[in-house]
Image (cartoon, rainbow, N blue to C red; front, side, top):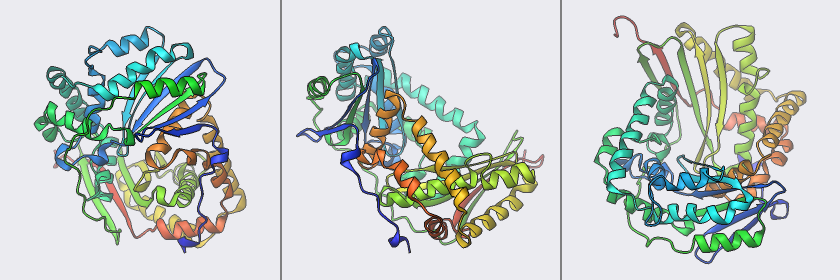
Length: 430
């Protein structure tokens, strides 16, 4: 049935940015906008999904170490260069990518971009800084163990993706990180921070000629490619039943229910967008079905929310509820019944239009600034192709009830999903 779904195609004519690929494989995306700022956002296809299991956390750790200097930049000097010009800088790592960005006045573009390029291409990863920063990363991991929502969500990922890298924590494993060496990180950097893995996005009041000149000059000398271990995941088997994991935590005041479904990634982008629409319909706002019934009308949960994460290999459709322990089973059963109804009865035109309007408005509000546009283009460049970044509103507005019914039946089975519960520890458990 899913083969009958329409397939969205990248419409290059409607893509407002310019996409250029250099001979070495590096991509440049540029859009000049009438605002006196510029964001340079560099996306690298080197997230946690490219780590071998023994190197869990290496991609995120490297994100920290990128800022620790080059042969020309001392540790900390990059931040000073950007901040003294009134700019800002940050970075993030996910399973599919790592990205690094700076936002400055457009007049400072030529002075700041070369320093960002220098950090990304020529990071020296000093031994002493490696040891110091490892303690920072280990503290992040310890803090995640104190966050019930973080614990539950990671348990959901590992239950849903038992053999795929998406099931591994992005922060990594403390024991594995303690065994890693600066030289291993250098190999990881030199293996993955290569032009064919990298996209430079420039959005702001900078001309195409300026962007092309500065990027071609700053990103000219990549490190010699190194070899490093690669992940060797076992084939992911489709879910054939409900996979459960029950956890108890001390000092937990409210129980948690995490439910997750593996759904299509970018290879079936229209189907993925339809599931994003279904997520909004059932748990995306106060007027959505599960929020209205379980929280507003019946008072069975303190809160419930839905989430859809578009990923390269397999997207995640998740539901999370905060509730009293005695409501865990009844609420899960109600959710199953409501998913069965979605597959059996088409949504009304009015309800569908409300959700379409909600998602299209959210998209519009999230593409208003140079930084937001740069992030959008870079994200799609990392997981698919940048031209698809502008297809979302049109595809969302094109869905009809019958197509959503097909998607609910195919992917949101009440009999095949991952379930994680967090319960307060009893006196006997303590």
